[in-house]
Length: 460
Image 1 (cartoon, one colour):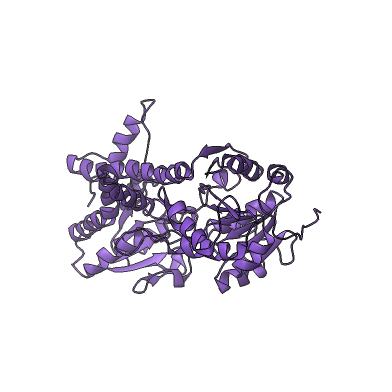
Image 2: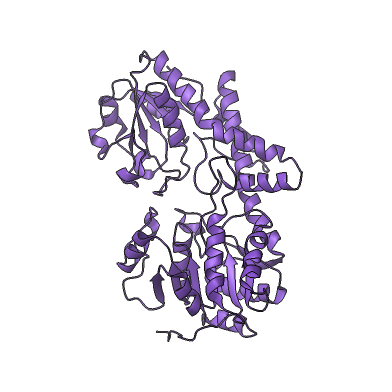
């Protein structure tokens, strides 16, 4: 067992890269949510002494008990047991800062109700670290939260000035965007490439050694902090645009009596065609949020982000479009207005993950409820408290009966592989809508379902 270091007030110096190579660093993770907790576990598994900080008493208490406080089941068997070596969990940023050489900030960067970037978490976390860093210690503070180019400098450097601290003397500031994919064991914290931005090239190059010990993939210093910031935000902007294209096509082709999946599969026979799949909408903490950060920055410099804005509008409106399709299916099948009962299979934004942030199931259900349709849901990854009020929660899928429509809203394995024949027998009206394009519609049709899907011509 590696001997834990107790020395305090260590930060960056000429030995940093060597210490990183050997795991002889204390690493603090500020924010133990869906990004921070896997990151903290990853650094511990890589051999570092880890301090995890979160303001949530619930999260901290769960980790002290060795249990998973989040909705990602991949973490269930990864939480260190109480008393494990190189694992310290606290609600005190000051305590962790005093002990650590490196502080990594992984707090949320949401958007406000008016779709503007909310940087309050980044600001408060940075302030808490800097206030505890002290003079002359050169603590390395790395932001991993998704932001637009220039946020690290514009948010954190004024705080340093206010506190009488100097970058390069009292602290070192860097940016390294997180990239891992929750629910995907092949692209976890320890399997994804990383990029590092830092105004001090010597510090930036030394941080490559830190992250190379964390991940088996490529790690590189890319120069200015703003380069790394921009890298992260455009990765998700690109995905939003690509998804918007197929979502728009999913609205056009059914009107031409074409199934969008047939068209996309045919187009994918060309070597340079990039295949995406339409759905009921885009959810999660990245794709529905990050484009607004880029749009904000473009507006600030006076450049219209027309393509990014248009793509975000398509994806944001997709639940409304789908709700119209679902209402028409119900009406054409003889279900009177205001009397329909719809069951959502899945509620979280992504298959295999118990995370309901920005899930398109919520706006879709709201649009249906506005038309007098009652909504129920079954999601084996979420608790009843995760589901909004006004939605009936089904605890046991075998008890679901009397519905007019089933919507596959999240492609959980458990949802895709239910006993479809048994559910069919309990339906009042046998309408099926695949909102994720993962079911065999022909097989479902043969079974007796009125099988429909996003982007397919309607089957009444």
